[in-house]
Image (tube, rainbow, N blue to C red; front, top):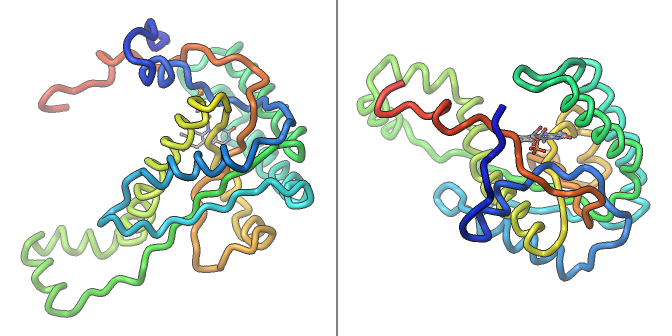
Length: 237
Ligand SMILES: Cc1cc2nc3c(=O)[nH]c(=O)nc-3n(C[C@H](O)[C@H](O)[C@H](O)COP(=O)(O)O)c2cc1C
C-alpha cells in the first residue's frame, strides 16, 4: 500500500497526510484552555440544518478516568477477540502487530489518559404530519418511500453521525495544530450504557466517539492509504 506521498503544500495538507492515530500519550495534564479550543474547533463543524444538537463531555478527573479504564479494557479485549484478531485486509502482518501493540498500550495506560472527549448528539423527535408524508412519498415514488420507511433507523444513525464526525475531524486537526495528539475511537459503543452511566449522560443522548487527548509520546509520520487513482471512479463506478 502506498503512503500518502510527500507532504508538500500548505501546512494543513502536511498535517492531514501525517495524522496517524496516536495511541501513545504522555500522562502530563492538558490545560483546560487547550481543551476548550479543541471543543471550539469541533463546534465549528457543520451539522444538518445547522441544528447543533451536539454536546461534548470532557473528562480530566482522574477518578472518572479510573472508572472508565476497566470499561475500555473490556471493549478493547472484545475487539481483539473478534474483528481485531487478524490483520485487516490490505495490512501487512508487521503493521498489524505494531497497531495491536499500540492498542494494548492504550488499553493498559487508559487510566493515565490526560483528557478524554466524548462527542454526543441527539436528534429532536421528527415533526412530520400525514400531509407531509404523502407529499414525500409522491416525490420519492412508492418504492423508495417504502425503503425510506424501513431504513429509518439506519438513516437516523447516519444522519446523527454525519452531524458529529466532521466536528471530530476538526478536533483531531486542531489537536495537531496545538501540539497535542488524539485518536478517534468508537469501541466504547460496545458498552455504551455503562459509559453513559459513569459519565451521567442522559439516556436519550447518543454518544459517537471517545477521543483520548494528550501530548504525543510517539512520532507522527506519513499515513498509509490507498492511492487516489485506485479509489476514484470518474462519472460512473
Ligand atoms: C470511525 C473510526 C473508528 C475508530 N475506532 C477506533 C477504536 O475504537 N479504537 C482504536 O484504537 N482506533 C480506532 N480508530 C482508528 C483507526 O483504527 C485508524 O485510524 C486506522 O487504523 C488507520 O491508522 P492511522 O490513523 O494510524 O493511519 C477508528 C477510526 C475511525 C475512522
